[in-house]
Image 1 (cartoon, helix red, strand yellow):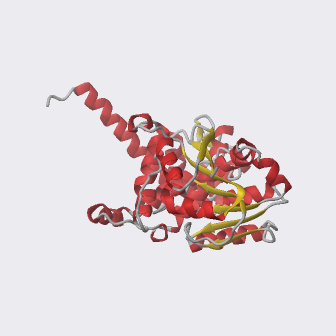
Image 2 (tube, rainbow, N blue to C red):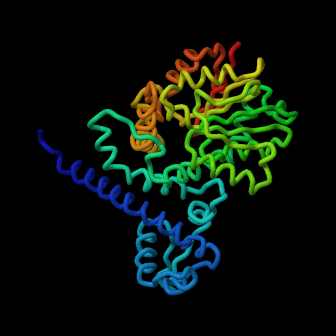
Image 3 (tube, one colour):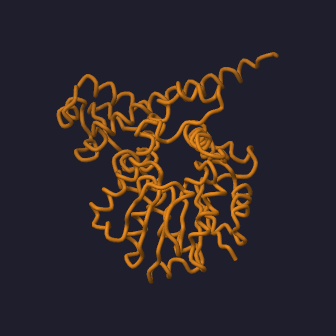
Length: 353
């Protein structure tokens, strides 16, 4: 094969940029853990000495970190004053944990998931899976932080209202099961928005369940919002008006079995809400920046997690709407519609009749 020199050089530059991005991800996690972004947001443009003093860190380390962040355009640098600062947009992404633009969880997830590379090498060779509990704790924490902005923006404001009649019923009082809830971000958001309803979150990752219960208690929600460690095919309870699966169905070994169990736990007029990463049905539709993130996360975490469980369906985080509809139909849902979508998510509404 004859190599086109100009195309090769362009591709090398792209790969080189990605090496820089990968290295920078570790620095973002470091800056988050040390409070460097928060100090810049609080005090404004600073020298490395000022930032180090405010955060109790080493000036020489901080100096190099700031320069690397400036080279990545993650912080601003003013050559005249020698100070580094955050634009409002940079602050929204790196310093506002509760904001709807925060990306800190995504970086945390990426770095934590990467620590499993050696074990995943063995999984790739053997075909075996790697469960959530076998990952660094940063995977579960980073995942919760990664999805929180989308849930805070859309779950109560647009997704639930897009399901026919559901918002009004939850306002009147409904029993809700949030399956695969992780650290309970989605469950808590719903509980705070619908005080007449009761919520129980189910997840088989015990550390996440413990963290979720601590959050509910700290917010004064534990009386009507609790979390239990159960798998998706064995959670207890009947008569739920809503059973939700948010960004978790593709992680399950037996998604058909999980949905069938949810169907048996529904009230007669109950609904299942499935929220999954946005994806087209064909691979070529997903060769995008969004697809890149989800395919990568799916390779490192989601697909191995499914393969570590019974059945091991391994839907993957880019399964697409048609495949999800097939799974829902196999579980006995006769009525499925796409209720709404965003750039990053699709929301399916499923009913038995």
